[in-house]
Image (cartoon, rainbow, N blue to C red; front, side, top):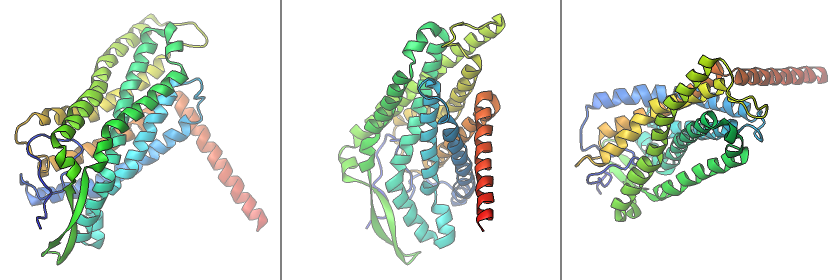
Length: 357
């Protein structure tokens, strides 16, 4: 039996992992080095730190009054998406570690199964995070330029609805991807045993052009590209407005129930800038690659690119936590209060256990 995946013909589907035997060869030593640096070390470590950071974000943001703070709703939804992405990514990129502990054949089998079961799920939350960045940019744009109307437009109820719609759109567009992969078993003489090999499902092959168009043009370019483009347009406008407000040294609105918070606008603008930096190039490349004739997405070159995209996702999640901690006094105060309460509870529990003994 052929132990390679059925190759695609020309266009690129950004959901497809490159785990087959490559048609465009890259130096084996180079691939091993990339695998060691990223999949064995950097991706695993950064995923762990990003997971801890996003978990703290969720704990702090849930202490906010979500019935009054629309920005916290968006940040909480984005942190949740980042958290799930950071949880699942190490399993997707576990071949190097499993191979080192159990052998290369077991590493290939585990990597194949993890890709079949988790790759699209992992990609889903990666894309949800990007979509929510566009919503954050739009929300701040409205708050900055139409502060009097913003209290009605950006009500927590409306923002919650917009967030749920963003989640639903991503799930709907990516849902065919859950039926893209299957696996078969092939005997490898060098391992002297059978290994699970990733293959494209009949569903994907029968709907090849339609699904590639859906994932690349409609999803990647239409939804994610629009989100990034909106962020790219809104951020300079917000920055100019903040500069103008700071120059006048006065608040834009005196309404006690709604005020234009320049510090909050700065924090959210930096978060959007971080997303543009780490996610923008990948979305642009996937779109352009779709139109490149004879670009084989199962090549090792494309696999290196995907490794870097996944790694950039962990950096983005980690950077968001650092932005919150260094720029938001309100967040830092809540974080310190949360840590203090947890420490107090642990100390009280320890004292209680000691007394009972």
